[in-house]
Image (cartoon, rainbow, N blue to C red; front, side, top):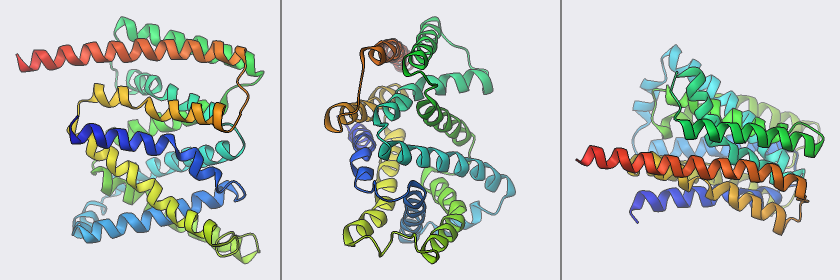
Length: 295
């Protein structure tokens, strides 16, 4: 395996084990966790830009109103995604979180059809039909709409669509997104501390280290992913992405003992079948295109 494959595996392993990290912060309100995640990841990314002497380029690229608008939308979407993710983990909905990221590839395809007028191949239509049936089944099985899974899938899907048209490289783009969210996050944390609800420096050294470390935990897999996306084909990246929700599902059911009923299994089974078809179709099509290009 080449370096790109290892970087992709590393990124998806990090994301797959995120529930373990954020479970250690379960006593901290999700909004505070996200505030710290934004602040420390922004500071780390700015430090990387300075260290790699890309700061001047970054400043020049971010003077355009169009660029700011694009990344304002991206920042809002990723902020909602992070908040729901952390809240759901600490409210014992890891299994539903995993469902959201199982759904993500299909949502990306739907976004492409709606907004980019991409055409689907017949097996892709079958995958979407099975996903729709699975979501409907789970709604009936849960007795409620699986809003956590769908919020995660659609915010990440629309975020990916926005980033597809975004002009900046991954590092610069993520730095700008966290910079946009930096001031609101800082003001909220200062306010929480002022009214006596702040957790930083009040919850012990481990809590402080984990809150600061959330920035590192955010930045590292994203940088690995950015590196991988430049080195390996999209079909390979697409197949490897199932590492993360699979790990999350295992953690939710086996480690954290979340309930998983036969009714849920039926809905997940439909979605897993859709993903198998989707992944195989993507693999076969991707390999055929690669061989055609080589020929």
